[in-house]
Image (cartoon, rainbow, N blue to C red):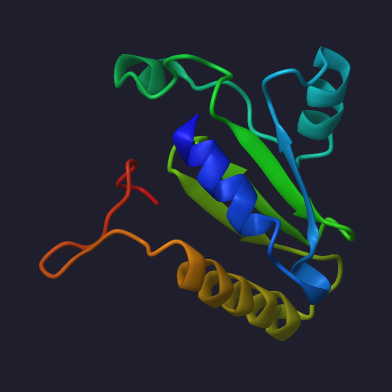
Length: 129
């Protein structure tokens, strides 16, 4: 819950193309959840591997999704990692998608420093990320 609160308050400060709304999973209707999952914007509850690692404890508490107005920038809060940043859009303009992502990473890191280890690099829950 603490991480969700930090993420929500941080993301509410984003401006311009990144400006959007944070939606906590707690209290979200099943219909809204399913629509966001069907639209490929929202994650599902963890699989058996995440459950075995205790990554799904207290589901759905502390989890949420943020998206900008155009749904071209999303942040998943506490899916596998604390944050998963997603930049996407229709078409083939990879430069625009990449620029949006870099801008978002820089803006968010100014507000919430990412965990980093000199030997291991940026720390993550899931080694495949």
